[in-house]
Amino acid sequence: MQESNSLKSFGRLMTSLEGTSLTFKDKKLLSNNHVGGIILFSKNFESQLQIQSLCSEIKAIKDNIIIAVDQEGGRVQRFKNEFTVLPSMQDLGDYAVEKNNMRICHEIGWLMASELAASGIDISFAPVLDVDRETSSIIGNRAFSNDPELLIKLARNFINGMNEAGMQATGKHFPGHGGIFADSHISEPVDTRSYEKLLEIDLKPFIELQNNLSALMTAHITFPKVDDICVSYSDIWLKKILKEKLAFEGIVFSDDLSMKGAGDFSMGEKALKSIEAGCDMVLVCNDYDGTMGVIDAFEKNDVQMSSKIKDLKNSADINWNDLENQDRVKGVKKLIKEMGRT
Image 1 (cartoon, helix red, strand yellow):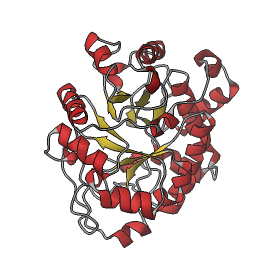
Image 2 (cartoon, helix red, strand yellow):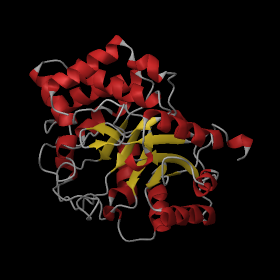
Image 3 (spheres, helix red, strand yellow):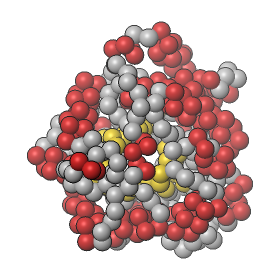
Image 4 (cartoon, one colour):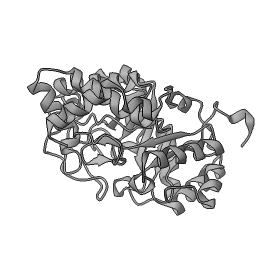
């Protein structure tokens, strides 16, 4: 790695690892300049100490890298065991309304982010800002609410909690995945609503919370009344609407390009289309050949590194044992247990 790149410029590809420690193949992959992020999954997790060791291993090879995980709560939580088992955002939202206490969302956002920060993780891809309750087969109870105004209040508190722990928030899935049943992991969803209709509901959280968000993740959905291609490849959605009209200045991630919703192009083509459309970083998960295809495409097309991504590095200095012994943590865990919805 060139010294001049350290902490200044980051590669624009986030990929995954094979297991719970680094293989020779992983180490070689990490050393490539185009790899600027690693996303961890349950297959990479055994214990808190092991994940902390894995993060240290990664950062010993490359400092200009972001380590991410999906630690939303509910059915999308990659690290459990010693980590606090978090409620779904729908259950959290319902409980916050029932108790008339939005601060609960702040505390759970803070605890989620604090535990990850104490383990060497930079970001959790959270919160979900999709407006849904039971319309979508893949979102559902991952969403705070099907009421956009309520969702904004709940999510803002959750984000503030994450920020207090030194973690930046990533809103997903822009411009909204909650309006259709289809799952973009296994199909190529189409949402036929107009831009005006999306402004009334789905886009509201992204607009209202944009100054609280350091990053957004795209939805692999096509909205033919706005553009006839998937959002992740659409410069209308990402440049003209998100960056120009809505004036979003944060980092834009593609959702996982291995998903069915990302279409049938080669992985290299998908990555180049996403970057060209306005994504700052693309995700390729659990697909080593696809990852190598993206690296090859980036090399051949001279895709430049990014200095923006460094803003997602976690700023906290938290010791796991000190954290777990805090009265505040014990109080939040007690609250979650009282919720009885994990």
